[in-house]
Length: 306
Image (cartoon, rainbow, N blue to C red; front, top):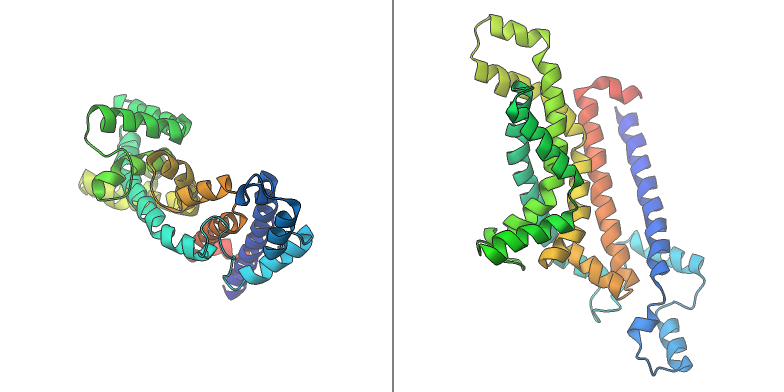
């Protein structure tokens, strides 16, 4: 087991290093940050002075090794837009808001997906199953930014039930959480429906029914417990989808999290903040995958030898 964990941990570190290289290169495609930092009337001397101050006069490979050597210590440099603020400090300030929204979206997703997925499997072929398939289709096809704007237009502008933007109480979270978690509803519901159909046809379920166990216990206790293994394996993908999806959702609803922070940083060509946000997102995603791999290896020992 220790060898399996060590191998997965090494693969995780390798993936994180590749991600650091990718984000370093992609951040610089957006253009020269000096064009945003300096006024239009700035001369060549000013460009040279600021470029030397931030190390932008160095070759790209030198800049990358400097960035990597500092990043392993948790130092992503100072922000170029928010003067006096460290990139990691800005991420630490905004990350709780993103985690709050992602956690609430995950809770809403599970509350919607679990009962619909179970009932769709139990009532296979009837109207409820058809409605569940339509919900899954819409969940995987509707763009989040479009869904967010439509929800805002209906429930905030016309009905006035929820605020249009900002962070506050639970009312501020409902619309962005639904927007963020709608795709996850479709994923969990389809996986759970498929797993439930397999479990419902198994021999142990037939045996529990022959013994006279109440139908609700058969479905919600025995079948659901065994069918939950498949959704567990994609939990890391779901968590990653919630974190990365926050970029679009937070922009639509002006939610002050890391998603909105990275959008502002990209517009300002603030490489330091962009790199810090992406590396943190990647780290959370990779760590979640690692934990799920280890948990799954405990559930199914055969995984350890693959």
